[in-house]
Image 1 (cartoon, rainbow over the protein chains, first blue to last red):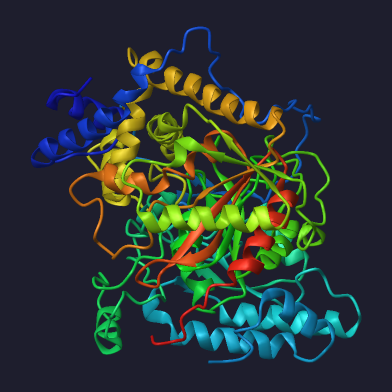
Image 2 (image 1 turned 135 degrees about the horizontal axis):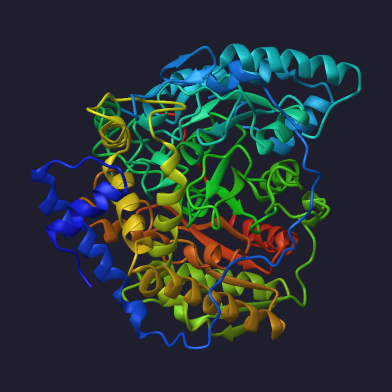
Length: 95
Length: 506
């Protein structure tokens, strides 16, 4: 399988990464090189094989549904590029 | 050269306990070494004041007879471990200015045991790379000089930003490996998703272990591919790695994938006899075009373990060749999901846009480097509607087959598997992967199977190339078989001798 240029633009948008028009052919080449590299996998017979979900078999643990640590609002928003009154500030999303 | 920076971690620990040296003088010697080596670019953030404060506290505890397991030992920390109030960016521009309000579990274990933090170490951006060239902070130089290099020319190359003409320490833990090999710290934390501890260790003549998945908590480590990422140390000897891992490992309620099993005394395993252990030699690792010197190194390792009383058996791991392509589906897929959090809202960089969607797109375009953007896009593609089964589910099925290969070998009585660590010695900075990203990916051909199967693997120096550069062997263990790996690695280390690390030319 390989990707065309409109697919490259679509993937970039899905990944929320802006791409310049002049980068598209180069990205297409690179993505297709990676897809060609993984092509080999089609040669493997995977019928009846379970996909791996956990690399080391382990039982998930139950825990109490309780607050265990909370550094406080100031710490939570402390690294935000823009915050106000303990809230993250984003561009307007509702007109 | 300072004698204090040339101690092994174990010897420094013993000298501190015997009060032959103080933690403050040991730390000062390392701070000085770090300052003098700035142009290697191994450290992206130095914390000398913090280090001295920690060393003072260590001396006080030693005086009171309350020394911890790593008391007073100066270490470097890979930039992907969250360190409270200290630069933590996984060497990405998108985490610009990020200073965590919390400490990662692994580093908190080190400080609990009295270790001293010298600063944060360079790495490939989000650990995506094999030459430390994708770091926002620029490439790291290896302290190993290229063959026949003129020291004057090397020094001049060191002063340039791109460092062309010098050798890579490998990646992604390039800063960790370079700093340890250059005697800037006694040991360092590193992390390994496809070979990021073992390949740099092999390239720099140091020892690095990626423990079993779940042995160390991933809490507070910047996530790349969560089902593959694992913490581990790089140090100058097997014993030093064993001491480091004992502190780093352990159960953590904050990481549901960390294993609730006691941490063995790994140090006690160093020096233990390997007589009667069964060592598998997988024929699939004899890849086409493998240099004769790598083959010779491998045979030397076989002889060494046989002489120590181990039984050598040929084994087959038939799905080996599919591990790397399957990895390049699973890892980018998980990365595309993990890196979705970098949106310019909660931390790091924000680039304004026309609306919120454009702000996300502009921020991620400016904040991620080319390799990260490429992997996030591939990951997005293989998870997208219509391709999920063909790529992602198929790769996860192949992962099951890869693990079954190992399970079969272990069920037949094999205790550990011996392979080369890398297909070549260290190469020059900027030499690989510029036209085809896959060229760089092939570095991990021997290490990536271990992550795909969740197993422990250790890389250690076992010889030198024709040009005199370090070459590493890898031992792969059973799940939680780290003790066996330390015993076996020590036998090879005793026989091959430790790498003669370069003296400071920088």
